[in-house]
Structure formats: C-alpha cells, structure tokens
Image (cartoon, rainbow, N blue to C red; front, side):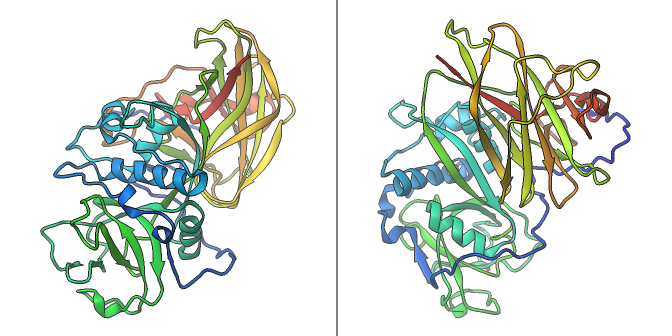
Length: 418
C-alpha cells in the first residue's frame, strides 16, 4: 500500500506505535519506597493463570488476557478465564494462530469492546484504560505492585540456548542485535537474585519474576527470572489501569478501528487541538443518548489534556470550539478516559463533536490511525471527520487528510442511552 502525505506548515513526527517506538523518559520521577522482593503470587494462586500457547505464535494474546485476569482477581476478587481464540479471530488487526501480534492489537480488541470473552462465552467487562512505562525500573515495579502484572516484550528463540538457563529458570539477553520476538508477564522482582544464576553473566544481581505461556512444566512451574540488565525487559511495560462492568446501554464512537498507529508531532507549536465529528444514534436505540466521556491516547509522561465537546458539528469554516469541559494531567502514557461532570444530550441522527488540546514537554504528539510503510492490512477514513489545529479559531484548523491520507484522529466518544 502506498501512502501519500500532504504538505503542511507543520513538521510531521511519525512514531510507530506497533513497533513500540516511543519517547523515553528523560527526567527521573520520585516514587514511594519499594520492597527488595515482591511477587503477585504471594497472595494469588499462580495455577489460576498459567497457560500454554503450544506451538502457536499467540504469546501476545495470552499475555494480554492474563494481564487482565490478574488485574481483576487482585483488585476486584473476580476470577475469569478469557478466550485467546476469540481475541485472535476477532482482532481489528487481522491475525491468526501463526501470524504473531503485539499488545497494542489486543488493546484494540479490548477498547473496541469486541472482548474480552470468557471461555464460557460471556462478556462481563470493558477495559477502560491502560498505561505504560518506558525504561523506568521504579515505575514498572509500582505498576506490578498496584495491578499485579505488566506485559513486556523480550527476545526469545528456543533454538538459542545461550540466554536461558534451564537449571535455574533464568534468562538474560545482553545484545540489542537480538530483536523483540516474545511477550511475557512480569509479576514480581527480586533485587538480590544472584547474577551467577544466569548463563551469560550480567554485571549486577537482581531480576524480574516473569510468567511465560509455555505451561506449568516449563521453567519453575511456568515462571522464570529475567535479569534487570536484559536489553529489552524495560523497553515498554504495559498495565491495565481500569475496567468497568459491561453495560448494554453504553456505546463508544470511534474512527481508529485498529487503534493508534502513529503520533503526529508539531515541535514548533505550544499545544495541539484535535476534533472528531460523529453522528448520534448510529446504534439504533430509541432512548435518549447522552455523551458521558471522551477517550484519548497519550505518548509521553506528564501530558496535559483539555477536553471539548458539543452537540453540534465542528466546522473550521464557521464554528469554533465551545468552552473546555475540563483538564487532566496524565502522569503516564497510555489510553485514558475523561468523564464529563454533566452529560451532554444528543439528538438522534444529528452531529456532535468531541475534541482535545494536548500539551506537554515533548513535541506535542497527537494520536492518529493511518497507513504506514510495511503495513499489511488496510485502514480507511472519510474526509471532514477530523481536524487538527494550533489554536481555537476556526482558521487554525485543517482536515486530518491534509497531514496524512486515509488517516483518522484517535479520539473516542462514550455515550449512554437512558
């Protein structure tokens, strides 16, 4: 597929979300003290979560489902067993048992409310938000302690015996020339874990306690140790941040069917605005519909987002933005949902818009879905659905198509029928 990128006054910074290529944390943040040893399975039974992917390339689906299962049991005392088969068959990005995948694909499946589906065929929860840490040991440990686990990606090749020590169930990859190939869970850590347990010796003691998807006969009953010095283990660590009970009266509007694929950057701007137009009532319910929330992805720590919405169509030729509904500082990157203090009544068949102003310490990246070189599936969009701008005046905005052809803004609208 060929992508035509329109010329604009802004500099485009394309960050490939599927390659987990995001802006690193430059300034260390301060966190509360942490124990030298921690394991989620000190309080939860690991046998409830150990899975076996067999010979399939489905580690990403097992890791994502296990992450959510652990979050639910740890935080809500709810035990679930979600279907990897359903996730693979219904993913918004085409996948199969041999294609492999990424955590981001699983999040598209969750956020589009296609799942999770339990093995017994029921769906009881929606994923509300997730967060991640980049190259941040302390924050990764905080997320494990709070939510039970994080998903990380490492290099793993069963034919390469130099990295995994079967006798001690320990793993260490010291070379970035070995690419990321496998998703696992981090469920704890041991600061005193002996460096001499590794086949290739790191410089210092310490390891994460990890959970694989190779069954209970692998490693130490499904678990193993990854050195703190592994070159990939801290690259990007994802955690489910919030879930909600399923409601048949709740809807989500979006154009980014496969989720965010890029972040558009504007280094010369102090802040960037994005607006999406939607049409109310597309879910076919005769009840009155209310806008209750707005969802957006962020790509860097400490991103400040101001939210906008109105029950009219946004038109940069004639209609400016209404006063903001509120503002939130998101400490970690990820997907977030802003809840309106006062729901906005919508009219069936009539337009409405939701939008956000993004500002932070980086190049003010804004989330979009768009084709990119090497993409092996198709994304489509229609003109005049979304707009990007550098101010509040109508003349400050341009259609998203002016930046990237067949692109959509990754801003979502949540509604409730009453």
